[in-house]
Length: 259
Ligand code: PGA
Figure 1 (cartoon, helix red, strand yellow):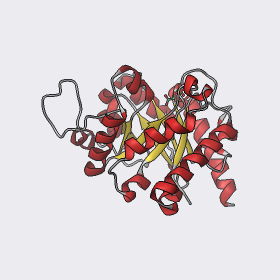
Figure 2: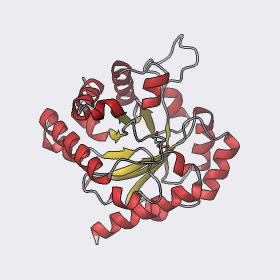
Figure 3: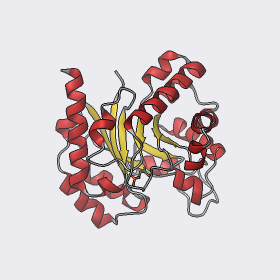
Figure 4: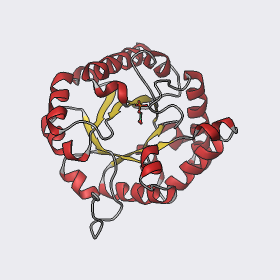
């Protein structure tokens, strides 16, 4: 059985004070974490406080980016070691906003994945196609290329520990998530692609989660899809009560499957 994930990325939102009140409102999530892995991805400035506030809790904290180098003259950048020191266990790599606004490429994504593998951080690797690429029937080609270039040189064991987040750019921040059946088809295709490249065993063990305008209403149908191993939520989950509702929905779906 693959692990199921529910996470939220906050983008450039929430001060330290807002982070602490959010986590206080979220409350104890330990009733859910036997079945689910729950994570939050605050901005860098809140990482230390989030980890301190979640000490002893099973909720994981991730960063939104990092540099691939160990240290050096990279003004404004943050290293893997710095994130580990803050208590982070996860790092988001290749989000489309970083690709679009901050010069992230498949090559830098690959360098960062290599660094994550060496430093004990588990990557959340974001991939996704644009509206135009989808309309041209190129979704799979684009995703295959992003995946292949991102994972180049990473060993199978580390690949199966990577959380792959399928985040179609045309769905992010629009309030309209991709259709569940479409997501299921793409996730299934990605898994088949991984199986071809790396073997069925690695593909079966790798969790593929969906992000892009996930909200309370869309979560039940998305998580009911057999190829969807979790959701990665932006805007809707910036209110703690909504994130908790989404966690509860996913928990009930997963427990149903086990019952
Ligand atoms: P959204 O963000 O839920 O606001 O669309 C998702 C993301 O960017 O990961």
